[in-house]
Length: 171
Image 1 (cartoon, rainbow, N blue to C red):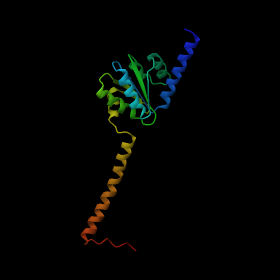
Image 2: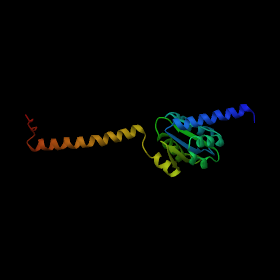
Image 3: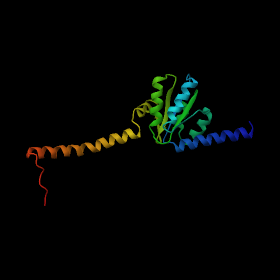
Image 4: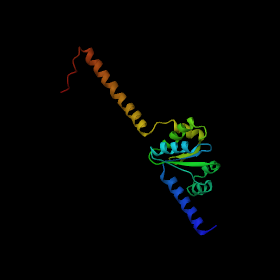
């Protein structure tokens, strides 16, 4: 093999390793049987949420995951695979890929890493059911708002019981 080819492969391995380091989550999927149009649709969907989707040679990904200590992924690097890297939302790649897989049987979520933790297929599918970041913020705000609303209802009930007058202020 020529030195140029070896250097090019080393650069790709370094690129993959950097992606693994920089991303909040990484998901390995098998795309055997997807049409070009379906792959284009999938890429567009992922790109909309800042998820990078790349097809690499399995051997190069294998070298990168070994370099980064993510060796659990090695056994899933068989067949036509692609890798999704989530940069802003750790849940986005799993959620988007699982949603796409429901409508396209040819796409199979294999395994991945979410915030430094290896997750096999079953756990990736569980992560996929979590809401996105905005959804989680909304749920958190709703949980924080509920106790305040209960206190307000109790104060209103006390005021109504006293004939509609507000309680006098303490001096």
